[in-house]
Image (cartoon, rainbow, N blue to C red; front, side, top):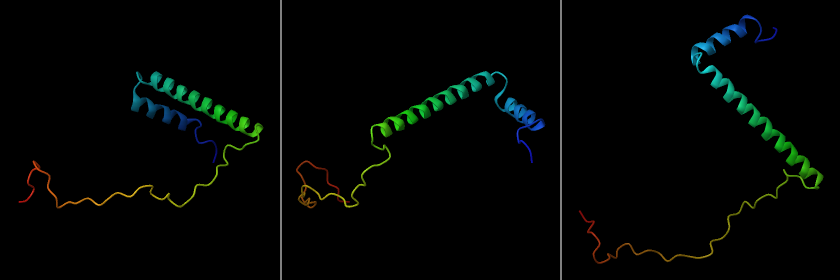
Length: 95
């Protein structure tokens, strides 16, 4: 079981791509894939640089203090709303 994309497999794949996208859109497709790969490579390099900077500073970027699983207590309590009272000028909602 050799290389998957060798010889006839590669030609069949290229023909299918040509039929799906058409000859006019292939250069734009290749350009956008190249730009995406370039952006991805730049982001990966930036992440590696950030990790190296954090390690040289003596702090690990991946170590974060765990959050408390308990929700904070409410700071104020609201009074219950009286739903039986009707304001003057309000529309009557009774059927």
